[in-house]
Length: 342
Image 1: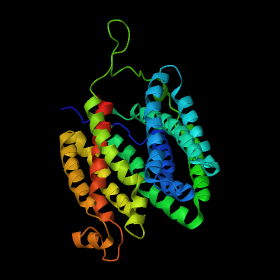
Image 2: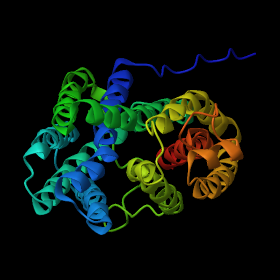
Image 3: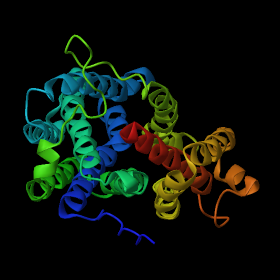
Image 4: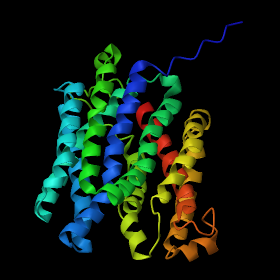
């Protein structure tokens, strides 16, 4: 009778440090993602279309940079690219306060998108190379928890900080947050992360060039649909709260944390044991239901009648977003796991 082999170690120093680094990167992003459109609209008296460009140019720059990073990653050290990306994002974060016009704000958002795109591409790549294959779903689930927590507490911190101390203080705080990621990055250096063959999953074609891996295309398409929906809600929740006179919009994100802490650790294990369908199908259903409910949230009174708040005086649709958050982050865990396993 064969003895059961011990489970491979997941919580290594490199895994912990990279997870913290990812949390700090996304915390910086989320602190300003909801606050910056409101700041631009207030400072420059910008219209809705102009405000939407602030988010759009950042997203386009980040997406384009991901393709560029994928090409550079074969020629330049991953850690060098990561340092460049983090440094660029940090510098531009503190320079936001110097923007004197809409044009300069858009240029800075493009620069930030380049830095964020580089860093957010490299970190998951490094993490996927140090997670044991048999614990891939669980590991990606815990790693994704860092992003999810940042997406939840970041906007709440950013909105409250801008309201209490102004945007300049928020920008400096975001700069400091990214600076803290550099010590974590230094502690994450491991031989396995640098030397493992990056072409293991996609072998060379007969001509010697690596084949294009088409397996992640469908999961990537699903992730695009989820991301568009989520980012649209996240970017404009502050302006939405102002338009319908909802107080304490930051509480919208508080319930994210509660839901994430419950869902994230479970979703990775469910994926490892039962496959992606057991996670994605309930997640997709939750997205549809929660977005329909969200569309009816025009006032705090509506939220009370639908029963999506914890108390009658809680003036935000946070309970509704809890179900939506569960959908997005369980789906995210499944997709990332499938992507790296493939």
